[in-house]
Image 1 (cartoon, rainbow, N blue to C red):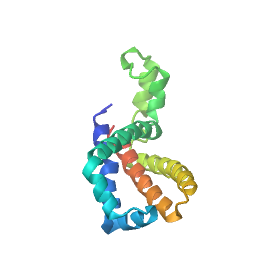
Image 2 (tube, one colour):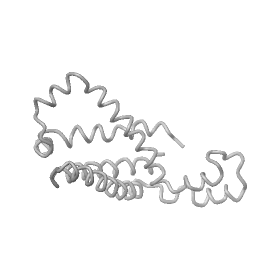
Image 3 (cartoon, rainbow, N blue to C red):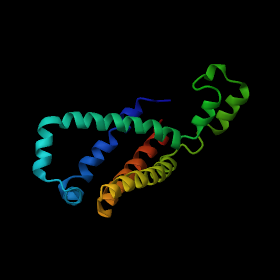
Length: 162
């Protein structure tokens, strides 16, 4: 497996977030829904924006490992033999992987699984949190669609290239 690809895939939420939450796209709608002003964002950027970006990247990297499990079905087969012990596998396992090792390893397949998982997980997590915080449905929708698009792209890239 080509695990270094995960470090690139983890950049997706940062790059998409720069576009999605830009004031010219959905940034103003998001700020209105949150009650955040541009002044507050400017002040936050002076003190800890790098720390925020680093944590966003770390959390995105963690998400990559979850997407791997959701999008690459062959990992279940590796889990049955104790992980990456390819040199200690039976010929039957090698034959199975020769036949099925690349089945459903496409961008489209990963995007489907990543999108469905992201939509469901973000809807219930953002929905519960936002409703308890008495936020609007607009707020929920902005975030859920963002996370769903991230999941589609990340799941697709992981399934295709890992």
